Amino acid sequence: MKTVTFPNGTIVPALGMGTWNMGDSDSRRADEIKSIHAGLEAGIRVVDTAEMYGSGRSEKLVGEAIRGRRDDVFLVSKVLPSNASRKGVRRACEASLKRLGTEYLDLYLLHWEGSEPLEETIAGFDDLVEADLIRSWGVSNFDTDGMREVERITATTPCAANQVLYSLDYRGAEFDLLARDHEAGIVTMAYSPLGQGGDLLRAPVLARVAARHKTTLGPASPAQIALAWVLRQENVLAIPKAGSPKHQHENFAATEITLTRDDLAEIDAAIAPPRRKEPLAMI
Ligand code: NDP
Image 1 (cartoon, rainbow, N blue to C red):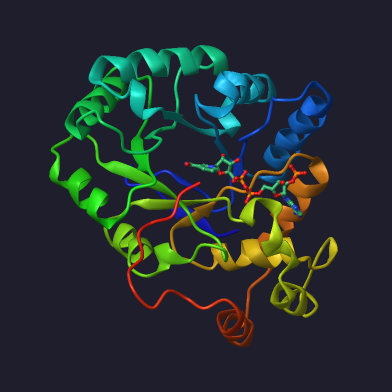
Image 2 (image 1 turned 90 degrees about the horizontal axis):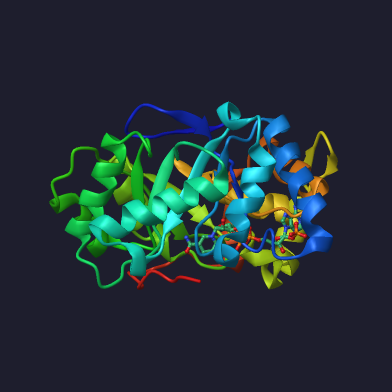
């Protein structure tokens, strides 16, 4: 399976799992936990959550799902910009750790840039690394200008990841951000890679390309093509959210698909790549 490498040398599979909206509904809870278990059993390592998701409900559900399996997980959470002062980062992280029932995060991200000076937030992240509460830190929704600012700030440990919107619906990051982050050794985490399960999955081009591929589960689906397309990029980690074991297995099987040159040309003809710099979109 394709992998990504973080600046501290940690290597994980390039397919992870998102958990936004998980834990919000009692009737879906059992399936969501089974879905995370199915992902871990298949070999997925990265589980992405945030203090913002359901005001902590996602973190609580993830905590329940990974109980007794912590060593199998590369756990990612995010601090809200409103909590991102040097002291606020510590408080927010401790609250996240409590909800997650763990002693450390593998990666802690600033969810998006707010009004706290970045120096403060990054100093807070450095404190957390020093205190063994996190193993690495990064940012989310940062475009090229923001990344330049991050790199100008002296930190004890380097920025490990930038989590951004990247899918066939939103190709903007492809213009320069992906390559820039890759050259800097920063992992790009692609969020909403399935276009949030919306119109993208009904795009005729995805159905046409899917008809030419199969996986061990059977004929490929448009969702699997959308994921394989994101995963074709170097050092990009896709974090689709799957609310059921069925979707989780399908997403895992997408890692078997290699898109051909013809597939990629057909996709480009239907959904054009960016021809100029566009501001980074975010959800
Ligand atoms: P995704 O693009 O991952 O889409 C999720 C939707 O796709 C759900 O409706 C899901 O349905 C459906 N789906 C999943 N697998 C399949 C499949 N194999 N076939 C058909 N449909 C499928 O959207 P998200 O917005 O959830 O993004 C993923 C993750 O990225 C989030 O969960 C979150 O962790 C992170 N994120 C980060 C942001 C940031 O600002 N840093 C912003 C947004 C997201 P079902 O639930 O029924 O499986």
